[in-house]
Length: 322
Ligand SMILES: Nc1ncnc2c1ncn2[C@@H]1O[C@H](COP(=O)(O)OP(=O)(O)O)[C@@H](O)[C@H]1O
Ligand SMILES: N[C@@H](CCOP(=O)(O)O)C(=O)O
Image (cartoon, rainbow, N blue to C red; front, top):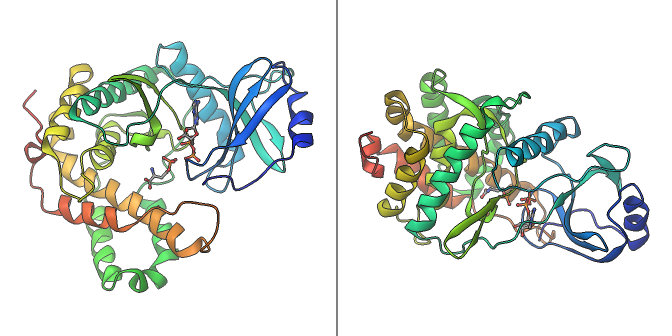
């Protein structure tokens, strides 16, 4: 459940006076998601998502995320559009939190994605990378190596209580990343969290992308590596090369990878596994039991990290020659 901040009918009615989307018909907290508080909102003007931004989203960065959605939508990417307030602003304040209203996107996320879905995701990710090329705003990735290190410093004292030996293992990982993390690969605007719950489908057709609140400027191939982690492992933690092959082929059908990106893919996938392990571990160790938030298991990503450590070339993911 991700409703960290609840709102009353009166607060909502007062907030909606700042918009031209009519009166509330109904609203309810959305159980899914983990970062922000989301509400499904029906008004006399339509169906919307109301988001109150929580701990990992800085108010000053909202213009980047909301501006990006506007930019991508203009370029034909199916994603939510922020709804402007009557005063022209996209961001308001509700229950003491920064808040925005975005359009509702039809579709459902795939609990059991197939290789067909993975191919569609690869294509959509590359489409987003291409469409973001002329987006004028810039946001560094706060969850790249330096940001991981900060998270790790906070989680490290408790990490061995979660998994004995984890401190030594992750310290050694940092040594590898600090030495070898690539900096000279093609970069641009990346989604940075394109997990199955952030991609909607109608049947086998991809109907849209949501949740741009980790988007930033970083390596395109890192975004693709995150999709390998998010889409190509089974519930029993085994790697599914058929799905990865489809994901990579879908991506390359729109944006072929450069040789240096191919070479870097195993290290990028390992780094991406560390990044998601760390946010999960930090939340696991710090969110109190009983809080109305579904905690995600860090172990899944410790396993992925160990898997990628033994991958020598991207051909093992099923990457074909260009
Ligand atoms: N534009 C949208 N259209 C339809 N549903 C949405 C939209 N945005 C969010 N949702 C719903 O809210 C859930 C949580 O949204 P998400 O942005 O992933 O939250 P969080 O940032 O907290 O992880 C999604 O799984 C989906 O069910
Ligand atoms: N995808 C991340 C957590 C972020 O959650 P989301 O609901 O914003 O996708 C993970 O799996 O750890």
